[in-house]
Amino acid sequence: MDAYKIEALLCALEMKSLNRAAEKLHCTQSSLSQLMNSLEKELGVRILERTHQGICLTEQGKELLPFLMDMHRNYEILEIKARRIREGRERPVRIGSFSSIANLWLPDILKKFRKLHPALTFDLRVGTDAVRQWLLEGRIDIAFGDDRRLGDFHWIPLRKDPLEAVIPASFPMPSSSFLTMKELSSYPLLLAPMNGFDSYAGMLSNKKISVTCDDDYTLLSLVQKSLGATLMPRLSLFRCPDGVRCFPLQPEICRVLGIALPPHPRKAAEMLASFAKERLAENQ
Image (cartoon, rainbow, N blue to C red; front, side, top):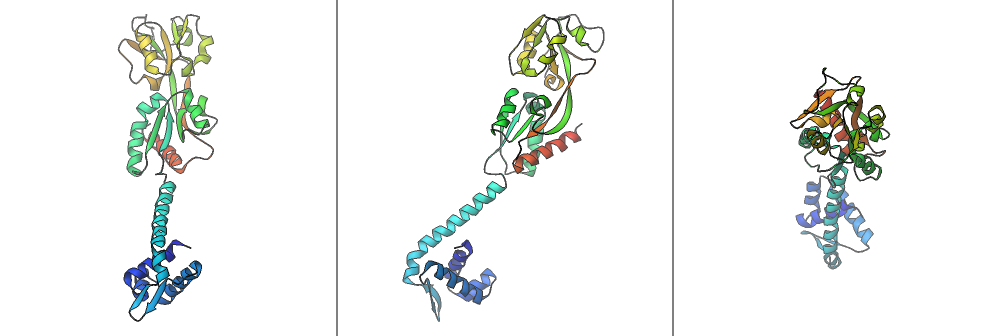
C-alpha cells in the first residue's frame, strides 16, 4: 500500500466527491476510482459508499480511517526524515583538525560554507596525532592535518608549511635573517614529539628537553621563559608572544598541510573538502 492511495482517499473524503478530488489531484475521475478500488482490494473491505450526493465512508471505512490517517502522517514523517538524511542534515559534519588550522583557516571556511548550506551543522575536534586515529575509527568525517599523519588516506594537499627556528629574545641572535640546523644546534633545545619534527633530532645537539604536549602555545611559553629554542611550523606561529624571535631555516624544511577523507566519505564532507580547497587557493 503506497502513500499516494491514502492521500487520494483523504482528499476524496475532504472534497466529498471523486470528481472534485480528481481535479485537485490533477487526474481523471476514472483513474481515481481505480485507485480507490485498488485500495479496497488491498484491505479486503469496502471503504467508500458512492451515492448521488457524492461519497461517504462505510461502517468498515469509519473503523479503518484513524489507522489510515496515522499511516499518512507516518509516511510524511518518513519522507521528511529521509530527505534530511540525504541532505546531510540529520547529523553534524564531524571535523578533526590541527589546532593551528582550526584557529587560522576553519573559522572563515565554515562561516562561508554555512552560507551556502545553512541546514548543515558541525562538530569540531582539535588534536594532533589523535586526528589520524579519529579518522581510522570513523569518529570524524573529514580531517585537516599534515601528510605525515594523513597522507595515506584520500589526500588533498593544500599548502606547504615551512619549519622555523623559534628562539628566546634573551638568547644571542644570529647574524643573518635565517638559521641552519647546525646553527640551531648551538642552542639548548625544546623538542615536542607531537610536532612530528623529532626525526630531525639527530641533526641537533644533545642539549635537548623533550616536551610531550599537544599544544603549540605551551611550547611557545617555554621558549618565552628562555628554557630553550625549538622548531615549529610557521602556521603555528601566528600568535607569537613577546620575547620570542622566529627565523626561517636554510635549507627549507616543510610539512604539507591538507585534507584527508575516509574511503567512503559522506557527501557533505566531500563538499566541505572541495570548498575548503577552493577557498584556500583564492587566498594564496
